[in-house]
Image: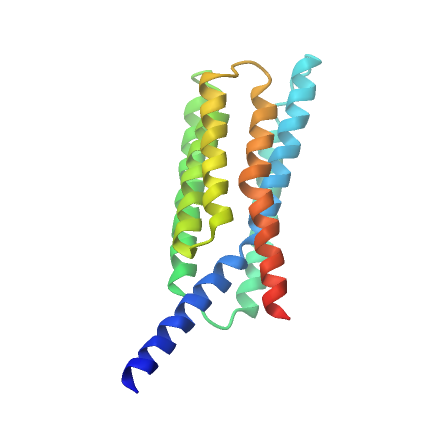
Length: 188
């Protein structure tokens, strides 16, 4: 009887962990679509010799604000916080801080930040997928790493923006929609 009880507890923990990860579909979809759209705008502007670098901080601040508001709303609805919630909070918080450092380093050194951003996004997404045992996120992380490699070694001109957008759609948006569908299916 004791063994059955332990197995039930472990199964409940795994289920809570997966459910916790599914709540993150909003963030993957938001950031993937937002940054892919801005990247496509960047590409269009670059080929037309229009410099509007300001679109990046505006998009980042807007995405951050939407993420914050959504997070507050979700926190009020949340019944429990799992270890996965805590892990995810620290992982993506560290991602955000590292992202700021990478961009702050890249710009004055005239380095394109896209490959670096894709590399760290790949790491965080891959780890998130591994922890939750969700293959679409693992594959999403790999897609982001492939995008980083292409941006670093293959495409070195304005087409980096297109590769960046494609990598974000493959790495964030598609897994995000799969997570959302899974969440809705399990809610039924």
